[in-house]
Image (cartoon, rainbow, N blue to C red; front, side, top):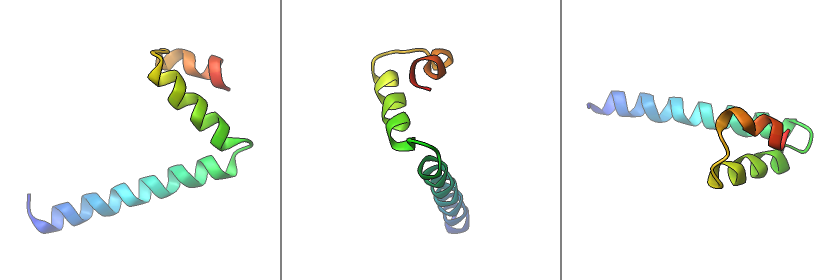
Length: 55
């Protein structure tokens, strides 16, 4: 990979991360829901069931 490709990927990752943080911050009780999702994933809850468990 050349430097331009790596720079592009880092910029893209930064934009995606910024959008994800913005989405969490602007939702009602977003940090609590995000923590619930991470705890559910760590305890083996299936991705299809996380909405029912956390939201």
